[in-house]
Length: 458
Image 1 (cartoon, rainbow, N blue to C red):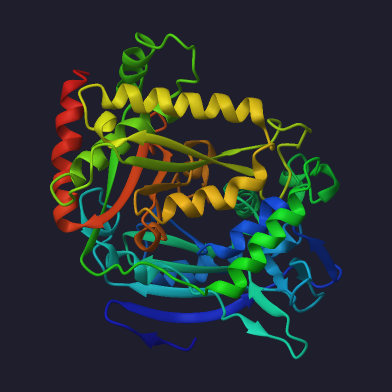
Image 2: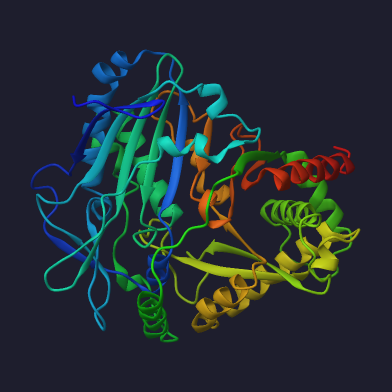
């Protein structure tokens, strides 16, 4: 092993993991109009933390070999993650390309001397606390004929001796949405737990058939134009993280039920009022109220909340649950600041979310040509809050045999200003929300959050 060191991290080894030789032929897979827009977004960074009370040598000798082998075996069924996204010059369409014997996933092994309990804590910590455990994707490059080549996935496994393990991942969202990625992760854990027996995957293989994605409204040409407009106008940008802290906030199932009761008591429209809806409403109101002391916005200005929901079996055409790719529809909810910060802010926000979801259910893809312009227009105001993740992804079911994760984090929210959401790690129906804010606003948010929680009288 070749070792390199940073402050609290020692890189023990780095190598590439490929599907078994001969298991995947050279193959290309087209992207769909659901995939194109994600090429403009930062890669997804998700960290899975596990308790692992063993020394590093024990991990290297007993766990690492099967971790590598099971990943290799799983990749033969999820080959896009060992492939590259090929982006030809205009008017070419981006596509996924796997080369037999050439596709692989970068896999780094490291050791950290950081305090594991502090790293996985819910209380505010410097955002940089988690950055050492995020792997780096190999750099993009351009071929002689002008095709930009984007690697799709990388892993870093960091051992905290006698305390824990972090499985850090970074992947290109254009290859697949969160449901596709978590399908891959749970498949990997199943193969690992089985000792490498692929029979465990027989009933849950991914579907790559792009023919299931229909285009009744001509969205491919619209999204391609949006993609080329982005390519010609900007590069990769991310917000600075200096001075930011991140924390996790938990709303229990009892809190969600109380919120739903409050909303449905005054809901005369029979809207979609779910745990997801009331959790978004609660957190959004706390976030906007915590900004009041640092902004002078007019109360009549609208604030915007961007979220996505899985379009599988919610569209004008059926899409199987095992479809591999992106099948997300963006939703934007607009509410005036005066309503969000008023006495009934949470109720009004929840009703607004419910109305948005109900409208999306009836419109389907009909407003698809306006997705990009609507989001860009809202983002330019500086009053758009994006949501990353979903409680439906079941990230805490990612069990390699060491038990369920003790914490799962989405670290790219440190850069793009989003909030993250997962199901609660205790499996009792609650929700976890991650935030990355500057320290002053985080202090304000904690105060507002705790006050609003007390008012629920749960």
